[in-house]
Image (cartoon, rainbow, N blue to C red):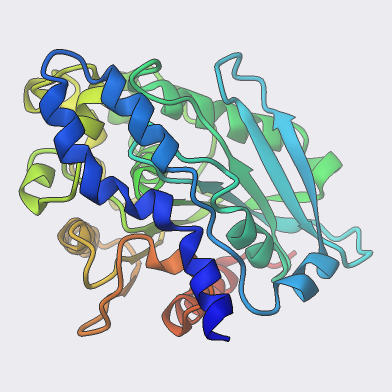
Length: 331
């Protein structure tokens, strides 16, 4: 058992290695962030394994891989996970966005999580998007909007209940998910960005945010490794704090009473935990339904929720499923 656990942990070493290397790389690259970004991208190739019963889960689900969702931009593909229940009943849709500091990551990293979530009776679209600095903000926002449109246009093909859609994401993916939700519920933000909402309030039942960043004005103060380089790459501005569109990326500024019910969590050792707690306060101040999961003295790291070999991740998964089921509109 110990050997098996060590093997699972070893798959995450590339992602964890970012902490020890990014500061050195960034110091060398004073003028351009591209060399650092390309190197760090390689370190985000870690894959989160499934839970102990993952072999059984795979027998209960199927995956349609590498579907082009029509963004005509690099990495514009997704995997669609579906339960094998021999039923024509339409199912809730969860759109899952991986992390990677806006410069890396992959749907492969979250494939086991997506498939595990699908086994509870959902369609789970595990979405890829283009990387910075080659593709700066708001490219992922545009792409995810295209992905949602594609899924709605193909709802019959994938047996999707488009009255029960949830958007989820981890780390950078959580930021993207949170902003996508804000665009759907805040006309002023949508108009400023020039991006048309693709979901109405009836369709978007909730947002699920894992270990994200939501306030770009104070995120540097968290001390999260590499955060300045990530946002330099994403905004195209070395001094990203002066980026003219920075407040668009700060979802806390765009929460209205119409923002969808939100599930939010972060590990107690995650330096971005304060961002999640600030987001919870804003949501509650605006009267938005909010389910939060935080910890004390558990030593849970960034993106702990994808580590399905741990008890804490499994318990959080159960809470995510409960959150979804409580908000699904029954047909």
